[in-house]
Length: 163
Image (cartoon, rainbow, N blue to C red):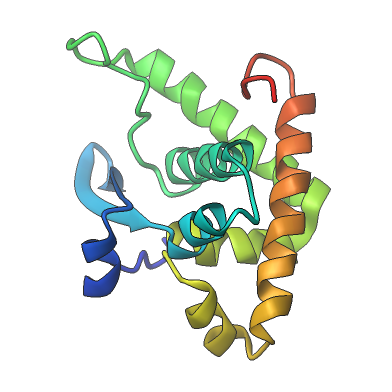
């Protein structure tokens, strides 16, 4: 299983944290905090729109549910226990969408998404990690998110609200 990094204290202070449960063993879940400083900073600056944020958050939910084994946030919303069959179907659908994104956008885009949405890195942290120019990273993320919105728009079912 991949290591999931906790957000920094600075990121916790920003208030853009999402909580999810990651399955570490069969039916054993641990809470995990997720943040994305880069995503919300780009939105605040006007470089990306709400549809880009929604697509990135959708990808992160799919990745956490399908790849990392998190509980499906839609399961059990009525207050009852979630149906195991529904959980498996939900997880399989999440894996399928993640694989579609990987095949369509490539491994480099997947790495950007993981760094930004799963590891919660800011653009500055990605600059250090990737040893790339900050403006190139921001531009690559903007293009990636535009492609991600288009990809989700073309998937069957109502995944994204109309722009």
